[in-house]
Image (cartoon, rainbow, N blue to C red; front, side, top):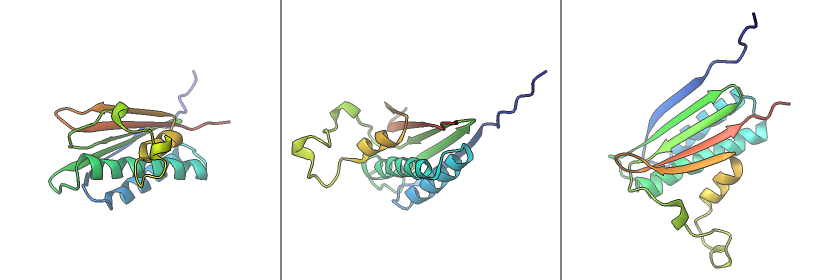
Length: 146
């Protein structure tokens, strides 16, 4: 009979304050979990940056720095897959309504590239409206073994 040698699923779940400093804690946790599933150092930092940017967006655009609102962070590490869910308590947004950050008219704008970068650093990216309100962003990164 074959033994199941897959490492167990591990999960971190936190409620973060609507402060930019919360992005530091989220990034550190993401990098630690990325290391556990076997991402190389460069991929660990890219994934950490994607999580950081997602939390910054939740704080700034979702919760608008409102101290009474929290950002819910959940990181799940499976054998060779990381899933991060970041949920804010704001009004939510439609991904399609965001301007294209690489369009000529937007290229010199000071902001607006966060989601573009996040999508570049992860394998899957999803946004949905949270219940009762807010936005839920899901990031998935696969460890490529080989």
